[in-house]
Image 1 (cartoon, rainbow, N blue to C red):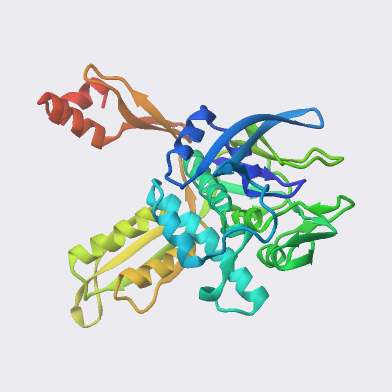
Image 2: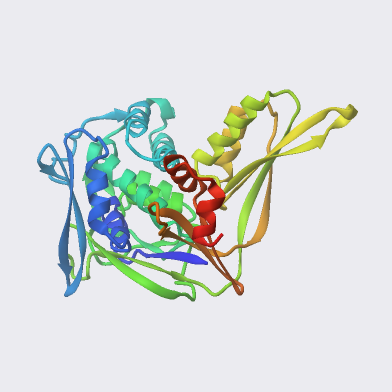
Length: 388
């Protein structure tokens, strides 16, 4: 199983998470180039080498119209509502699943702010977390998670710092109220380091992506990334990300199902694609016989634990069902990695799957079909040359 462990001994912030995760990629600069092509107005990303207490890592600097993240005085950020944030995220050149994750992160922040300030979610106006640099951090982390594709994300207990922090609402205790609400149920601790170590953005990203919090699990670490914060403390101000593998074993997934007998095939197909676009592990339909002998369809999807509510809401939104059933299942899965397969007609993307004594490579059929059309060949001829 491919596992990502986030060590939050100095808290978590969006830029620290983005820098640490970018170090796990084969080509971090390609990620930065992609971020600079997203279409965020006036936003520029730059990845820099950074050192904290003798440790070398990376820092991702986000500038908005030439001003670096954190350089704006508190209280002078543009105020944005949840609809504004969703519109910005929806316009980014990102896969739909990444947009769905980014929107879900902001939904968490909005809910926390709503509870803290006693206002409806629709009335919440973001301050620091509504600025373009914060949107950039959230989008970047969500894209990196999609690129790394860990089967499980675990995190350490979160160091939140101590003292007080000045924000748009005034001088507040650390952790800030919205951060504290986001971290409810998560093991956190303070200490002698004065300052805000975990930001609302960092807390929301951890809450959304982490499957568990605690000690580092037994794992064979393959790559380590250090994401450096802007400030200097007596301890190395960094977030460490470790990507590795656990021994072969099973992992939990959630299965969601609903029965339908009053939808067209086109509408069902649209609902299924909406689930896949949102990042479902799989989605499909099964033919069933319902009460009174009525033929029907069962729409099913798989997702990771912790995401079942989001997918249940999508099923309720895009189908005529009155209810969705959720079940936790144990799944044995092969390890997967993206590969490139060479053919006389050009490269073909593929996926290598290994584990449990099994090893196989499957080409991406869309690439095979494209080469077949371009060279007037059958797909069988191309597959034979690949060894399928």
